[in-house]
Length: 230
Image (cartoon, rainbow, N blue to C red; front, top):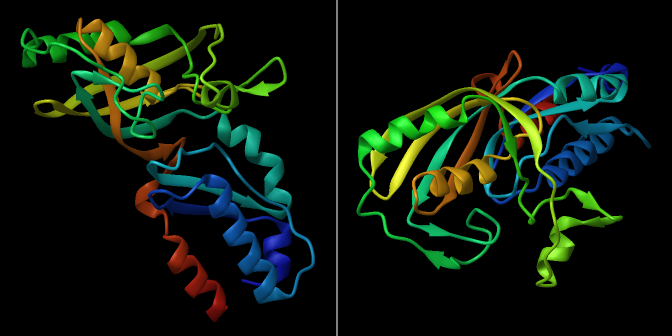
């Protein structure tokens, strides 16, 4: 692969590590492409953010392929992960501390499996306040970090598959296939509510975007090694 190849456009499948932002992953890859091929400027972007506490598939486009980012962002996605029942957090995941605990003695495995049916198809979902969405020109997480609240409108999303893959109480493993704009953190929160309890997202991995699979992705370290040998 040459510098011209990257300028003409490549689609890179990266397995994002835990605690990295998607922005950091893009920056690292851009820096190494520029350094290796002595390129002053090259466009590099990703097709869909992954939270720092999530791992998995990040589709990164270079050069002319960045024009296809919106197309890739619109494709269906698959995630696997873990809900922890009996407690909620303000961010709906482990980014913030537990704020409420709930009774779970009434929750059976059968109830957990049956409750998934409430979330199949087109549903209304409220994004978490700890998100990068904008309202009145401000990022929602900026409002949240000030301890303020605001009305967040719900939006329609589509979940085509939602299965429970393992239960080790209070942890529940799942697999979800969903549309663009779905927040798995919100799904965790809403799932807890539907169980007449509470829940938060304690692990998340993106496994597919359209026809791209994390099985074909490479780590950032391996990408850097490969590019240095080109």
